[in-house]
Every structure is written in structure tokens, then in C-alpha cells.
Amino acid sequence: MSDLKRYIGERKKRDIKFAEGYEEGYGQFRIGATLRQARESAGLTQEELADRLKTKKTAISRIENHAEDIKLSTLERVASVLGKHLYVSIS
Image 1 (cartoon, rainbow, N blue to C red):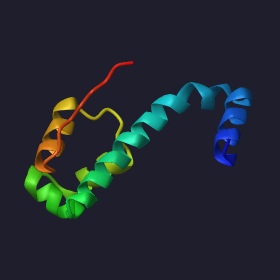
Image 2: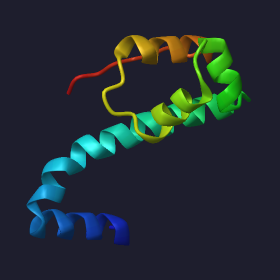
Image 3: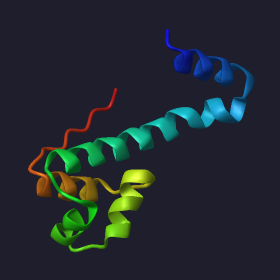
């Protein structure tokens, strides 16, 4: 087990607020990180992606860094512009 995983496990045990918000926060982080990675793999800057989506660079930055309450339709548009497919799984 990595030091980070051990730390997270211990923190969840002693900090109920951290434990309650961890999964949601981590999920939002993963969405933003995945979108950033896809954008970079496509060789696009945030500004170039924003232009293709007819939005502003700040909107792309906000999505990549704080992917909270992002609409599914927005994720589909981003994926399409990046030449990717969006898959949603409920488990």
C-alpha cells in the first residue's frame, strides 16, 4: 500500500467530513484530469479547445480543475471535439 493510500485511509477514519466528501471530490478530480489528458493527447491547448467548443479558455480551465456539476451534454461535446467517445458506468 502506498503512503498516500495509507494516509487517505487513516484520515477517513479520524475525519468524518473528509470521509464523507472524499469519493465525490475524487470523482470530480478524475473527470477533470481525464479531460485534461484527452485534450493534451489531442495536441490542443485549453484555448484551442475552447475555440472549437465556442466557449472561453476559463471555462475549459474550470472544467479541468473543478469538474463539479458538469453536465453530461458538456462532457459529450468535449469528447466529440477531441475525437473520443463518452462512456458512463454506474456500479
